[in-house]
Image (tube, rainbow, N blue to C red; front, side):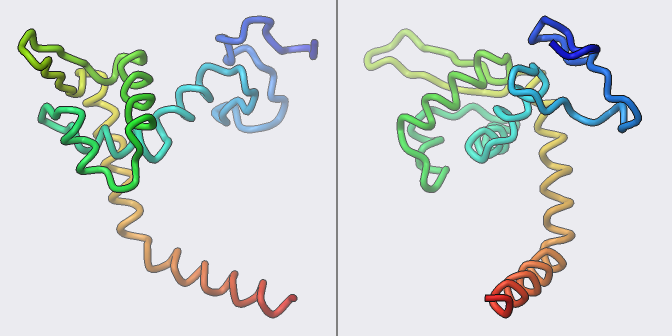
Length: 143
């Protein structure tokens, strides 16, 4: 094991980064921070969190709203978000059972962060489109 590396996969803070930025994310696959970022930053999680802002939705409503998500992928996403304490699942004792999803207070704090990311993306989408076109043109000319 490398010097400065913790044996505990849940402890990323003890890693010695030398002269690099101390706030840089740990890139080890077993790092809890990386695992959480991987989960909450995937496209389906971002869409679910955005849709659940200030409202409860049933599974079928979420699936209808999220273009391209499969039933299985939405189920996996919701379970992961529930496990992480970001989404609350409520089963109502009626026939047929009615299940609703909503953000927890913790999920609500993440929504504010996601909103900032979307705002940044909207503000810079033209610059990114130009950069992509320039890159693609250079790549095509290099062939």
